Image 1 (cartoon, rainbow, N blue to C red):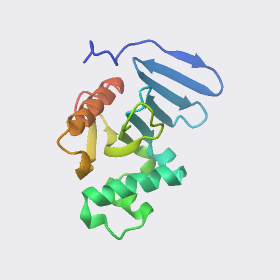
Image 2: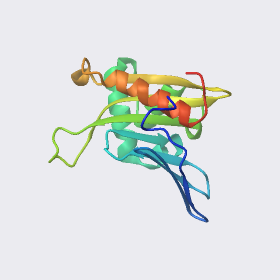
Image 3: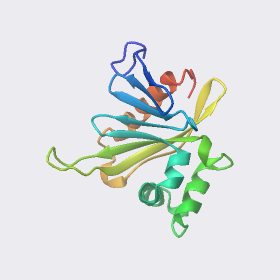
Image 4: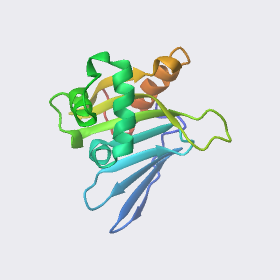
Length: 163
């Protein structure tokens, strides 16, 4: 992975407010106040959000809950907060990272549709992964493999050797 185009060691810091670490196409935004981070790949097909951010963004929470309900029928009927909590088990939401795979139907379409995701929790020298899913309408197109590769790159970026 060290030679992958998304991995490099360059970084920039704006003291007091925002820390931005470019990792190839991957930009990491961290608030120095609470050090929660959100990541976005500039081509808009991947977003990585800390669970604390998801809890504050109702539209994003609803989108995530909707895809989890589609992929995990046992979550049908649960409210959005309960779907998110069910999906992370005993972990605190603030300790989770949500890798969201988005799809844009055309270059002229400005909106992206959430089509898959995986949740990661940092452990000692690795990441625990859960909630791996791709919407049935988008299965068979390699998006699941893309999500797993994104999770691998995220692990490398976080200096975690094991998934």
